[in-house]
Image (tube, one colour):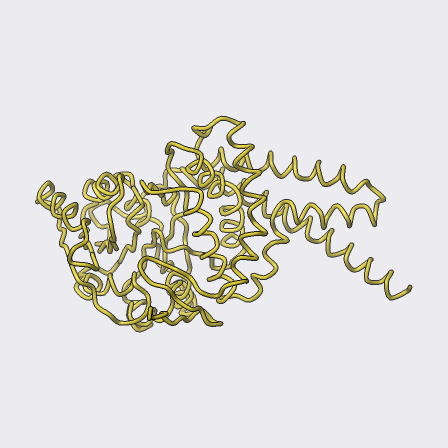
Length: 393
């Protein structure tokens, strides 16, 4: 009995600590969004003296928004940059889109590379290699095909690249689009994802996604260049790690990395979340504890602790805690959106509930199968982040 009581006390203490940590993450994220995102950064160097940037753009396939997304990079207000468009397959319809933009903007320093270069199992790295090898500027900006930018986005990122900073990244978010699947994505990238992403970076944990990253090319070259990361599927994590291991700091842009893919659905969102969870589990085994940071699981654990310590009703506490979480998430979403979202509060409530309900299923699916499908390949993940391609028989 004494041992059982000790175990109950320990679990109760864990629940109370979990409560403090999770709400600290809520407050850090909300405050950071309010103070940093969307703020115009004072120019830290004259416009004409901004460092040259080589934009590496990996492309595969066409969706309804591709041409409009790509065009925003040809209209950047920046003194010195080049656009390196990289397409893997010779029959990819993205080639025609690229040629159309190259013809429309002849004064932009832009080139198209077709065919890639096989250097490892990561298809994105293979695609980017020809562009990376001829990049002529000291800064490289790796930016996914589904991202759209504002004319001053690159200026904002370059101004964050101060003397001791080696990598500038954008907080992933989603543009306003039609349909419930778009609402679901926007709710996730406006609530759960930035809470973990921002609080980790504020507390000194290097958390970076490769959707939009500005990096010093000489540091990447010291680490072996892009080819050194071709053995990993999550190349962004290991590129960031290589930069951090060499003593460089990270900075977050004041503008979000705005995802605007024209192809989206609930099934695609779920598949993406499962793939990301698999990668995190294989790179960082501690990720198996991730479900306790989600609303419903955390509320049950904290509610049980509150009942054991304070004799509060578990169900009442669970409902009140979920409501507080729901409201906090909405406050954060508005902050990242820069105002009210394009969907109604009812749509938000439904999307929030569905997203939170999916978390355990996504996690269990990630644990069940160690293989992932990405682009046109299937890969078996190994502990530590490496992978091997599964050849179809």
